[in-house]
Length: 177
Image 1 (cartoon, one colour):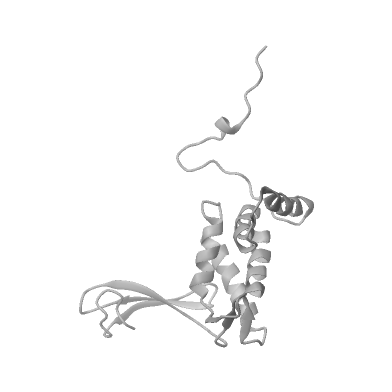
Image 2 (tube, rainbow, N blue to C red; image 1 turned 60 degrees about the vertical axis):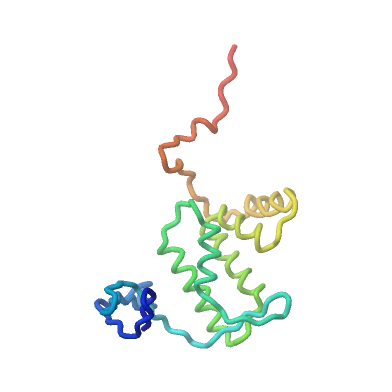
């Protein structure tokens, strides 16, 4: 494994342990040339997936890109990273076991939306707004209406923001007199 700091190919594994419910192996590595330490993950890949974009362009599937887009949607939400990892691993497993090598980007987007809908409604709306290219407030209202009508949607409890906010400033003040 090449060192990300000095590009030396002479790195050593210092520790290996299973992660993600034994679906991956986490390896701590050290470079004897520069002393740099870094972590790598080893996962089973059933087949090389190709994403077919809406334009027809084909690009290799990138798990990290999928994770990054989900992380944007869940930013500042009370969701444990382990749940997100399990969700991403489940989506990737589903795509790999579909039997198809070329996966339309719409299939990936819909899979993410379905998973986020069960994970966190706010993250679902955030992702949907980008994925479906919302242009007007009515687009948000439509999706919020879908969530409100779905009794199976998980409801996360609102939590005060970091920094000690107690939400009291967001509550309406009682009328005087």
